[in-house]
Image (tube, rainbow, N blue to C red; front, side, top):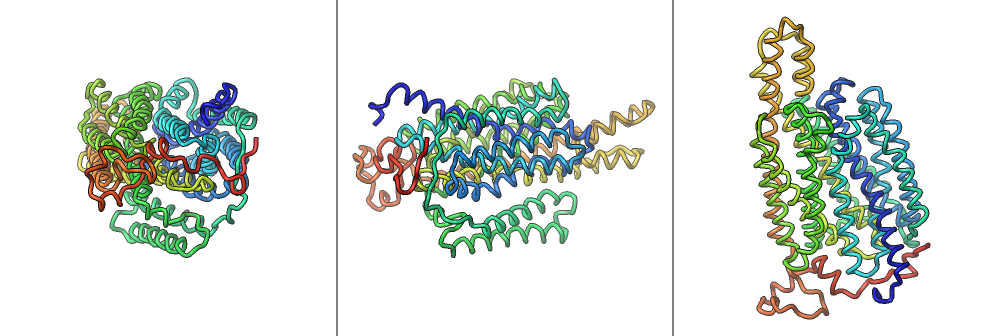
Length: 555
């Protein structure tokens, strides 16, 4: 019981939560820290827009593809042990990425970093679920974890911008290595381990199918602007990816111990919450990929100045993540999550109206609205997912939660980035000034950064031509930003409608006192309700401790 807990026990739990949140923070920082590095990669490694998409997506794609297997592995071998191995892999790959000589080497290092992150992330949440066995306590801990992960995603550009202002582009990866070592030392000394001795073998067939399907799908989407959206290569790659994913789902249905228990999606709360998180991070990743380029290429800010100007997103996500947990207790998940998605969608439509001279104060309001909307989604939806699985399967449950974020982010960069790339090339083709050298045309078509670099490299006698090229590239980028953010905003608004339609609102927990507001509801409607995370945390006495026979906890 909470009342019998000594101050020393409470302090130790606080330290454990701090250490686990640090581990989650660093790998979520790495999801977006690379975004402010993109202009530097264009200038120093001659990276194209396609290269930039892969630099971002190699990490999140491998992260997402392996996270379900890593969750199962952590349940089987020990969550603390898998977490420490993941930190080692992550740190070593960060060191290698810092000294990459070309986009291909950096993309490979980012993929290995994703492997380490896949081992880290599900372990953090499942360890929290096992340390904080009281449901009310756990809801608060997960709320802080949700705020931490959200801040990590949004704060990445800030940290990366500061590093780029002081050092070279590789510093955004190099600093991760010693930080990972320090975090590993803290976790090794204070965090207890836990495992499920009865955990089934890893579903490697599921790992291969899900990885191949997602990789093919993202490959087709990212390469679409280069191959042509109607080309046989693009259509075949995307169709092949979807077919492999369909086979994956069918295979998982027939397995006794699947990597992904597709029956979980029969739970309305689980499915609606997973979909909301996927949509939220889809739109966030697409927005972040573009807005950092807007600030640096169009507004001319340095990487550090860009990071500072994105600070309102990080702050609003952190505040709203905590507020969202409390609001869910009072008004239910349906209202909180639907409102959050609607806010984010409307903010993206608003941001799509920016110009090269829009006042920054207007952008602040737009980013606060968008970040606040995303923050409202994070914690309530995460606790809803964790509340739908047994404590013994916390590793798989947390991995499913994490996978929805990462698949959403990977698809967001691929889809929104490719839409922006297509719109940019289409508009630029109509606006390019005559008389440009062929190499300048090719550079301009590769990205807005390539166009600006090409303009600067033109002979001084061609200053008028250089100015025309810069103006054409700027106009084309703003056109692509408008169109792609409106697509992202529309996806978020559609998600809000789906959340309002399918996410349970103010349900009753069986055996709990009946709320006054539930009295007049028809019985048929009550039968469709499911427990919200906030109410489960407060009202449900079940599963307050792990079964010693099924989920051992070691100091």
